[in-house]
Image (cartoon, rainbow, N blue to C red; front, side):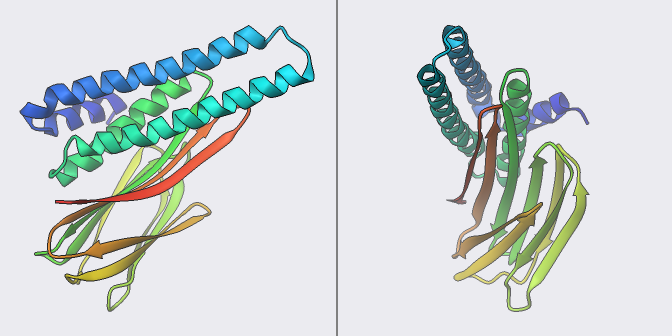
Length: 228
């Protein structure tokens, strides 16, 4: 399935009363990305004719600062993407996938490269299950292993998850009012995500966002939970 078909599928799954919000959100995201690239490009053009070392250092410092702000805004917009389908867990994950694709496409057309790794965890307390979807937008195949510390530890793994690939798995025997640690291992990275299971369903999102240019490599890793 193509990237555009994935985007269309996501929008169709969102309820009608939120459709306009989604369309406006993607327009806003595109304007933000284009504005960031235009600003960075303008700075490069404005100072490219100057030779002094101090000017070069200042140019690099300013561009790095702008890239940091771009990464922060990307993190905010990724969270907004999943919050548009609040209370519809499958759509929350699909929106993250759609906006991640959109971001990579726009950045690849310019001087910046975005790499995104995302895990959406839906805890269903009535069924005692965790349904987990992993999204790879890292630009290469990766190996992924998930381990959950239930009373009898559970694990699942996939080899060579393709770029633009999604993988879903499920863990059972999840008890109410219990804190769990989900270990996520991918490429050379390992992260323990704490999931505090109460008496209501829960959506937990794990983000690994990276922004690369010829001057810098920036990264932001974080997680966020939503009561359903």
